[in-house]
Image (tube, rainbow, N blue to C red; front, side, top):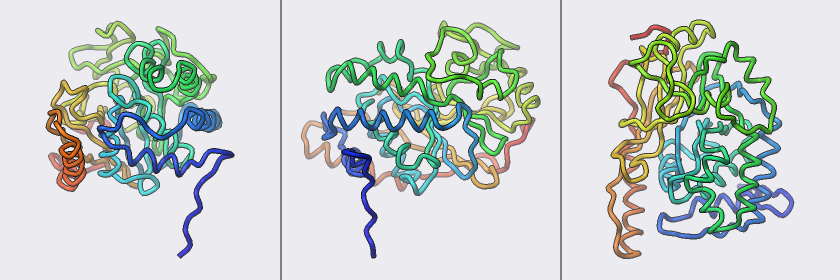
Length: 344
């Protein structure tokens, strides 16, 4: 049997970088990936993002993942559960960096897969893929401590070129945050020029920041201090006008890893279990099959305690991977059916 050749881009051996990254252990403080290698990865990823549209038009089947926030060991658990590329096609909804301990490993591995499988692996921009936010919430400090401030700036050049929304089979609309009062047609998204920063108001800001709120009718100021919250009525009108089945978004911690809103016209997917070590939430991956049947795989929260020895750390890591067999469950609280507007 012929061995598959490693993928090289000039001096960059992409397969070697991927292999190094997926072998990183939770207690490992540094990775054997040089700053020059990361710079080459960033350059290649930026070119691919700019070559692809701001509104991605995708075909099922694929899996949709929500916020990761630097929880790299949980990203590896996600892939062990749902399948490593190219076994599964993926759409990630943003917020790869900040708050968690290993934002660099997280975003670099995802960008490597984007480069290797550009038409099967997709990454949307989240509100933390913006310089003025990840300057404050951990990514800047991690880059400065482990590599350099210049590398952090190179990451921002890539973030400014990422797409902000995806449309699956013309029926499922995906973004990081939510809807916008200025979003009249989906063609507006195609006309956004890149590279672009995210302003404090406007369409781009809302797509990355807004939230659903069942207590609101219409639009109201968001308690985050940025963008809006929108009610069920806004969601229903949007789905009807755009002839969509459902909106899929991340941006908020939800207890079970996913949570429906507005007669199942919207679902929040969050993929960082035990978020920040402060929540006892599960993570989830949403599966969309060829017929747009949607189901969920759950990443259960792990016990949070600090192992005292390297041996205990290694054993806990092995146990965590073994337990993935037990957490690969498809949600069956409701009969599996295609999402349709107005479905109760």
